[in-house]
Length: 267
Image 1: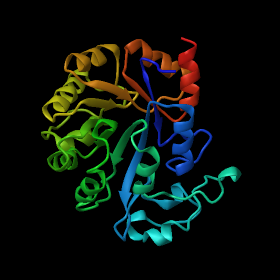
Image 2: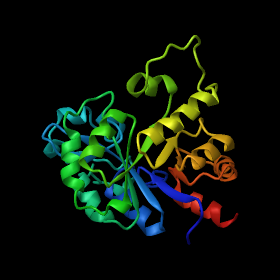
Image 3: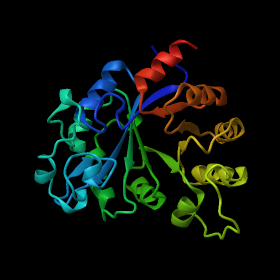
């Protein structure tokens, strides 16, 4: 069943399967999600791996940083998140995931570069994605300078601007400003969010990906008026889903895609 609001499985969905694994992505495809979001990093031997964290202890029972280990070392680690039925699940290569999804649903690849640095990762991605169906790809990152470099190499692939904390993104990507106050996470002025929307347009993005704490109906309407899709992360409760539906967001990025599907069926 298709819903007006798209169901996007965050890290493949991670409420009942280990995140960012082939098992998670296979499950997301099986339940019929509209899109899959995943994260990409590069290991010491140059392979692109699918992992949200650089710290392996967040995903496995081992320690170390992805960028410091070879893929041969990484592939030996158990990424089952302690779920017995997924024992032996590994951190996959991006190439394996691309072969699995193969244009079946929208694939949102978040490129991780900060605070870690993967020089030239855009060249690796451009080579790997050159023949992938462009209409089924969406590239995103908190590092908009990286997205600019990717746009030159992959001009036909759509991009989304990820936004989290204003100070974080402004310091990295926008004009420098000095805030006269210490902003609380929920106290961001709408004028600054609107500047994010304008920034997305100026960057040639097709979508704005704000955090759940940033959006309201007026801002979603402003983004739509600017021609942007709005996909919000990461919403996992029925209360959050209902609020986002009322705002008329285009997509909900969730750890619980099956729960969101069931919720949408009841609306």
